[in-house]
Length: 217
Image (cartoon, rainbow, N blue to C red):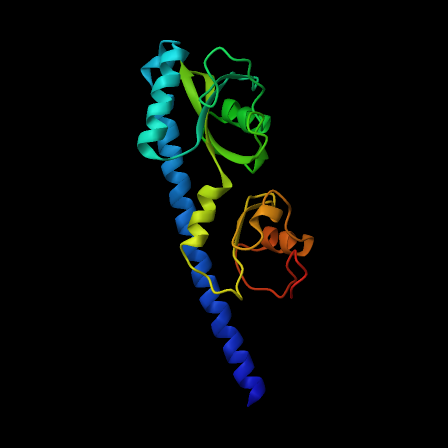
């Protein structure tokens, strides 16, 4: 009887947790879709079409303030050199894009790309970006990136009000922790456990027994 109750209780727990995880996936997807739509709208700005980066800088900052989506906008050339960053005054020296492979993918495919977590060359902090093409004469002339902070996703987890005995985290495709309900200041930007990364790469969803980064079973 005890064994049966344990198995049934565990099965129900796994079902409930997977249902919650699916709901969180939808919330994260919605956040990224809104960011993508905002980036594509900015990429179609007449200021970019006219090559007026100073006017675009002011316009982009207004859009960021009005929408509350993203913390900055970056314009890079096809080689990944930043030409504009709304965190800096127009004309200031700028580093290369913090994740050049994203720029390369946008230029090669002509499609929007969601980056993994990387370190911002301006902030020196973990960020991710939605990168979209800026077209001119049928060619990808530049790449527009809308930067997002891990805190943008931490709010999604916080809204669930998980009990203290549960831990929730969001990972990027490389297994890097983007947001976490416990120990975010320590673990965001670090990899998950090798066992966990192998499992999420092998299966789209499921349940497993494992040990957290803190060593808690």
